[in-house]
Length: 76
Image 1 (cartoon, rainbow, N blue to C red):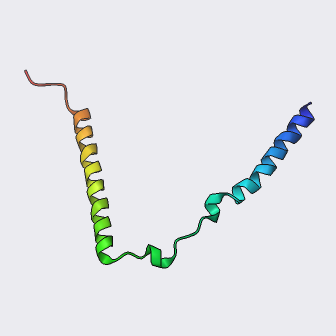
Image 2 (tube, rainbow, N blue to C red):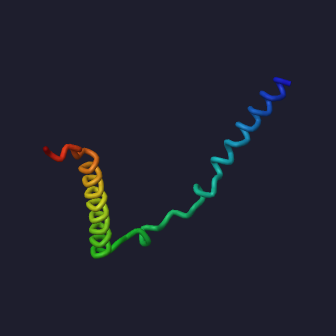
Image 3 (cartoon, rainbow, N blue to C red):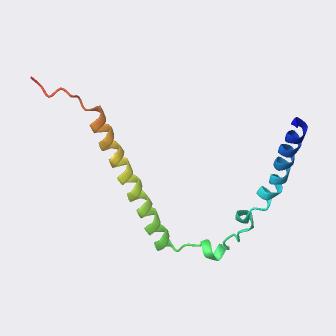
C-alpha cells in the first residue's frame, strides 16, 4: 500500500514537470520591436500618468499615517 502511494506521488510529480515547460504562457508571441517603440509624446504621457498615480498613492499613505499617529489628546 505504501509503495503504491509513493510510486503514484512520484509519478504525479514527474508527470507535472513537462506541463510547466510547455505552458501556453511560454509559447506566447513576444511583441516585436516595432510594437514596443513609443513616440516621445506617448512616453511623456505615460511617464506623467505613472508619476501622478505614484504621487496620489503617496499622499494617501501620508494622510493615513497622519491619521493613525495623531494624538488623542485634545488639550485641557
